[in-house]
Length: 258
Ligand code: CO8
Image 1 (spheres, rainbow, N blue to C red):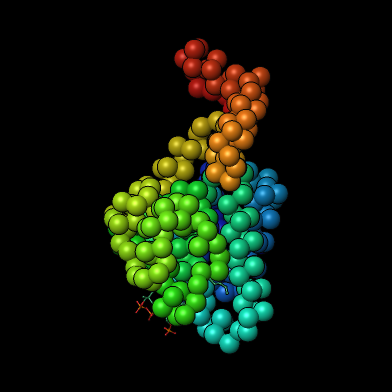
Image 2: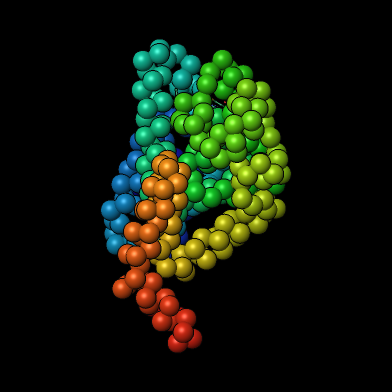
């Protein structure tokens, strides 16, 4: 399927989504959400037999995403705004719940809905030129795609409220210091670094990788005891299949046959 805003390519086991609307700094409009949901359907069903192991999301030009599309939102009433928020929230939740890991390769501005998109990814790698922020309060708005909920969980309440209440942008290095991103690279090395990371993850036990994601994410939403009970179950599941093969391969000094 061809899309207007999203460019999708596959490099071996890595799917790469590029948001390609640089004239509006990749601002998120209804068309984006429509295409993203179609693409997620394709990825989940493994259409055309393409079973990717890691998904990467990046942006074209000087922005990752500079926010929700202000031109589209400016004349909405409350009901329409709630609908737009619901669409964004459910799309980002689908992304977050994908079984495979999702890495955000943040090439530039990640503001408002763009920062929220990055927050819904599992790992964030930023170009040193990237800038982060939740500038909604500058417009008299609040985040609507999960930012008020994910940001405090990722950077802690104080850091999150500072970002959410001032509307200020922070640099990639500040984002790294507070754990908002996991790595910062020179701009020209961003994609190479992310693809290398994705390839490394793709070379690990594919079922194990999916399981660490789901157990860690479910554990964050539950008590420690529930998380540990889930871990024990999934740990046990790895025996008799991928885990057994991985351990045998190690002892036999050969590559595992996943
Ligand atoms: N929406 C629509 N268009 C945008 C957006 C946006 N978020 N950001 C930039 N653009 C457009 C500009 O209007 C401009 O268009 P044109 O060339 O036609 O004038 C073009 O992109 C280039 O932008 P600039 O000329 O402003 O580029 P600069 O390099 O000078 O500045 C900035 C870059 C600092 C990123 C600046 O563009 C900016 O401040 N953008 C807005 C950032 C922002 O406020 N984002 C938050 C939006 S609100 C939001 O995301 C809420 C999410 C939850 C929604 C819930 C649903 C209801």
